Image 1 (cartoon, rainbow, N blue to C red):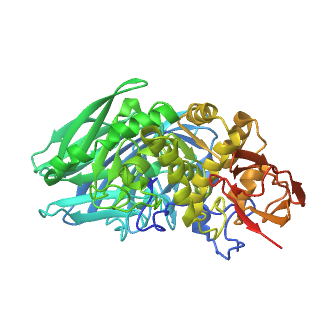
Image 2: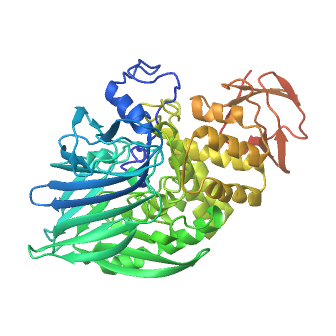
Length: 554
């Protein structure tokens, strides 16, 4: 979300979603869902010529936040490697924020703005292989989030004691809503410094490790944070409040991992009890997914004035210290009240979103489908396989099938919110096809090793899963990711004879399915053509762990 990315009611909970797929629609085209994309969508969502020639190395974001004026000012120093000689660079910053100056080697550079995309004309020759620096100065009143984290921006709130309580959230809309950067997911910065100046009675918590607190004579303090791992733009955050801090050490697969918690002071006592879900989460996910991907930067839970988000090493939390999703069980099975949804889901994104990151937001299911699915693995680890299965199936009951899970590429476009629950049920179904729990665990851990700290495409994930499962999953993914129909088994009963077939399927879809009989299970192999079903008994049901429907016809 990226918060986790789940939110407001059973449907809004799916809101950082995918965007429709179409390699043919580079920009201002009219697509099958009649969405008209603009030049700004293309500039935001594609790897433009002015982005492609340089590779991000490091950011130093150095800003002053004025809570009373709701104002940000400062600069971002960008270190980059030249991949191809070019004279223009695209930097993104969204209104009403403005770029006041751009410099390189003390030379002030001209800037041409096209909406939120700003094209900087470079004075120096950009030689291939050189490592250069650019400083972008900016200021203004950033967009205020009206309903964070779904509509990104800055949340300028007050806590119950009247203290400023401020946080950023920007998945989808982009980090350029509050700071200037290369706002496309394909190129993650390798490391980052974050320096934030605020009134001294408040505390800022950002990503990574705190290096220093610098006190100033004007009653302000600057916190200096350092992120030593690659980080995606929307994962960067600031969280400002009257915080209390407590911590513990988790002994994980890679050694001692610092777990730090920052909460409003009035909530310290209950947080110390409620946040016990955090080490339980870490135990379960390290078992299933492999080591936490950011030991060097630690792990934090930070209370914020909105529901929550998966900011890397700085997970934000606002679930009101309740189990479930704001006290509700999204699965309607009872299992969803065994854990705090935001802690488990948003922290799960450390593996799927922050470690493995989509290259284009059209592939957002890679974040949300996997993370929604591994909620059930948390339950399985702590309560048994029956609990995990029931939870996965229960959450599958709210699938909409309104549009494809994959969005349109190159225009910063998400697809259906089904990327959450349908994506999760799809993966749960795949586990049934593989039929070997240890192999499935190794596949999940292998994903986080193979694509460690990388941006990926759906194609890469599909190919990896096909190869490691040793199953051709081409039609499987075409069915569930690119089509809105749910495969349906039609069957006819004639005395003791049963015939059956698949309908509502893409070409070549022939996924085998398990039947539940009085005496155990039986695999069947439906196809698009009618065929006889060889059963020892005519009383059967489809195993509920498969994402299909069945209907008897005359």
